[in-house]
Length: 256
Image (cartoon, rainbow, N blue to C red; front, top):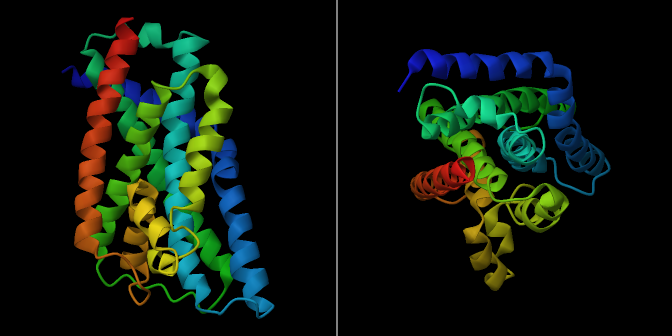
């Protein structure tokens, strides 16, 4: 491991992210804040949704922002670098093992996901006004869940970026990300699917469910959620599997 090279590459990605900060914030915040405004402000103020819905939706918005940001930050550059710009070839010549280049991508994606969650939640909180009902009773557990969600998004981006072709990006969003979002317990708690037992059991394969429920359980524990110990355990297993899958796919694609 060459730490000097590793930190130089990480610093380069951080510099690129800073230069594209306005685009990054707009891309990350626009869609979640629109959902917050429509579901949390318009429907609540019109009486079509209960005021408590604000506290239900905000942790879900944080999870979806982190997931989308992490996936895009890792998957999109990889798809372009491997198949279009071939920029990845220069990095592969760096004096360190190929696997560490993938690890650098994961860490850079994690940092962007954490920034997305940190920026969107206060903005959404201001947009919703009073009565959100968030509380940070277990800050350490919240930090653990947030880090696991950020890692989930970046490792998922690594796996997708090394598996999806440039012509299949639209298919990835329509067949992978859209169903994940709609059945990821972003806009409702998992317990809300009790009237649909088959769907309630099937969505448990969706990692976004555990991201949304984990952040909801740490930020708004007064609402129903999956037990946090189960959430942490599943996120750890899912992250481990995605790390192994992503690294293997990255090495095979780099060598080929």
